[in-house]
Length: 49
Picture 1 (cartoon, rainbow, N blue to C red):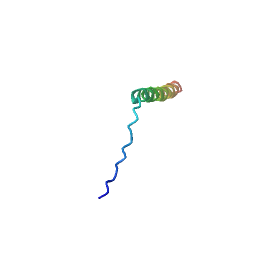
Picture 2 (picture 1 turned 45 degrees about the horizontal axis):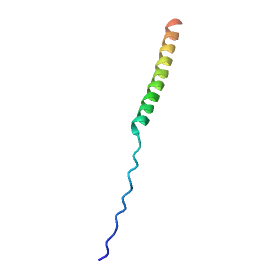
Picture 3 (picture 1 turned 90 degrees about the vertical axis):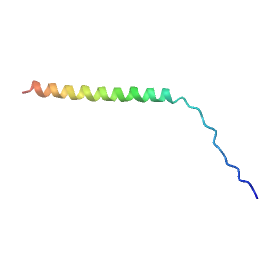
Picture 4 (picture 1 turned 180 degrees about the vertical axis):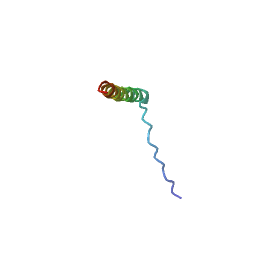
């Protein structure tokens, strides 16, 4: 009986931690921009009352 060969892909070791650190920094930057925008609009609204 013929045996089939299972081809296993060699696992490429990538440094995911640096990628995740960059993602975390990007999320914090976007969150900070959104927060600054909301606070600016709030103070603009309160100032015009």
